[in-house]
Length: 297
Image (cartoon, rainbow, N blue to C red; front, side):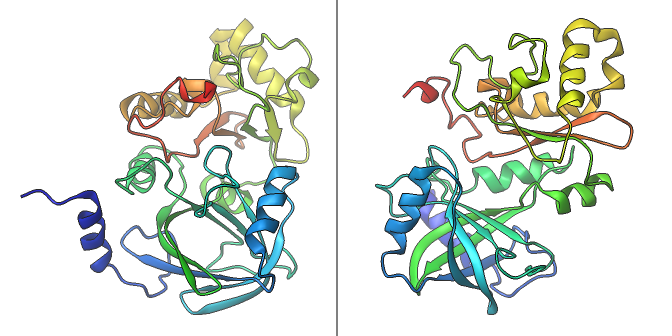
């Protein structure tokens, strides 16, 4: 007799520990996250901030596995995964929002995904576990999330790709750093695909990529120009090995909400060798959950 998805997850969670671990992103551990707001209409406020789209945050307190943190900044995150009509929305929690250097086990930002369109509850955590075997990739684990002591549901907690991540994996944090994040989707697949169709000036790419470092637009355009005009020198600007692993991963796991789908949901970081490295992101719709028609719906 086969277990249902719900029964499987229940059995899995029953065997995990809820105690804090030295590694926050331990897939064998079920973390308990409790968020507290003074405002009784916190959901309306977070909905309003999400609709405004300026990444504003609501201040609250946070308890992770019994450890308390005060004056954290909370907002909803994501695009299609968040909705004003949804009870279980994804969270982005900034621990050092008001208190400098406040962090949990070295992490100053907690990102909680609401496992949308994944009845198995394992797509994202499993995808990151596979990816980490072949390239720098985020840690991921499970978390029970409460707001004002009301259980919202089971989430996946995914390590932010930020300066701490860069230091851990590249030993640097101040080089050119981008996220492929087009402001609107071109259904023909152009978007942030490192093609040069947008133009010949780095400013032509502002709507396709988010700059995460203090500067670097000229470095990004050099990458784009070499890829399209001088491919024999591709290894001077791109870590080709890791790029091929990224493509193999996306096609092998049918992860189309990515570079190979609509050219989005990935980062680029320039290492100390001057090579850009792709970094995977947002894999809650891997294993064929994302259809190429979804972006038009």
